Image 1 (cartoon, rainbow over the protein chains, first blue to last red):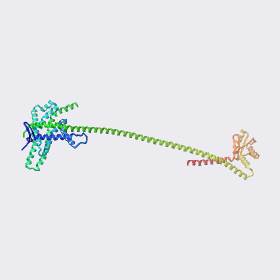
Image 2 (cartoon, chains in turn red, orange):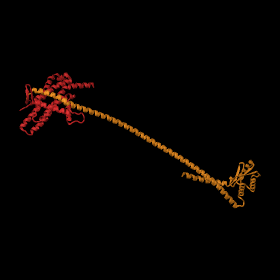
Image 3 (cartoon, each protein chain N blue to C red):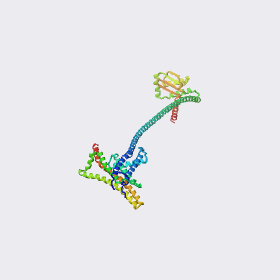
Image 4 (cartoon, rainbow over the protein chains, first blue to last red):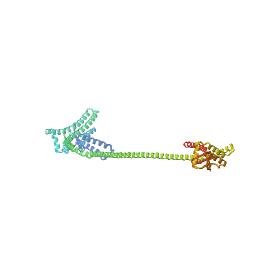
Length: 233
Length: 258
């Protein structure tokens, strides 16, 4: 039984290989970029817009509002990273409704890659917001004794991010495959619908957690800024 | 279940490329369009607010103008009403004064007319009374009217009481002569009779002068100093004239009042 789409390899040359995960990722990328380009090439800033533009605006604004609600006031800076992560995962999971489709998020390599992106993005955004000193100070909060725990926490949450998404999507696909062999009618449909719900929830959880981690890294900077603003005001 | 590190690296690269592409083709244009629309809405709202304020201002101005116009209108109306009232009063006063003048003129004309009528009537009555009296006296006696008048006058003199006699004597002693006026030229016989009666009253002979005065109306009058004694139809006619005039004036007043 195949667990990961990484196992389907189309081409290999030493370390390099072209597997189903990468191909599916490219498909999703093309789908997202082309549809975005098609809709946004004729964007109108008038009051009357096309339906597709309205849908895009709803999606983008929902992501932006969610980011702002979690404490990141400069949502425009983070929407590229967090929004893309959410859209990629959600599209990847939702397309599972198509037969013979393998979600790239069902590959541990992909989820690890995304988790690593978060792992790298957190210090990058944190340093960009509050400087290297400010960011490093978050590791000794509330005191120096917490430094090892903070480092462990940083690593463990990255692993948990990767494992959670992989586990959910992979298990969904696995259950569906097993059910197909046991009860080929009705149940797989139900499980497929259930899998879609799980996929959306997982995409939401992944994006929200990434936002929370970034917010935590930039929170101190924001606190200092708001304190200064209050004092000045 | 193992991690393919090439796939991991490839997926990281893929993801970063996707982030860049979506930023370029999705987030930036959509957010810019939203911002631009929000800006437009804000502009339109502020414009609408401005226009609303303008409209409010214009409304206030119009209201103010309307109020001023109403005030002016009512003032003009009041002034016109006052002018009409004054003009009415003036015309009414004018007409009343005119009417009063006309009434006075009418009354005056009536009075004058009455006076003329009375004078005429009096003259006619005098003539008539005299003619009737003369005729009657002529018919009653042989003697003519003048002699009858003289006789009556002599009787009157003879009827003087002591006081009148005394007055006559006092006046005569002052004047020294007697003037006898009559409406007609007296005959000698009548003159003698009259002189005799006068001498008797004066207890002496006195010089006498005669004058004819037609106004006396069939009468005789004697004058000496301040003393005067007369008898004629004129006195009767005067009484009649007074009563007639009074009657006429009453009638005229009634006419004017009505």
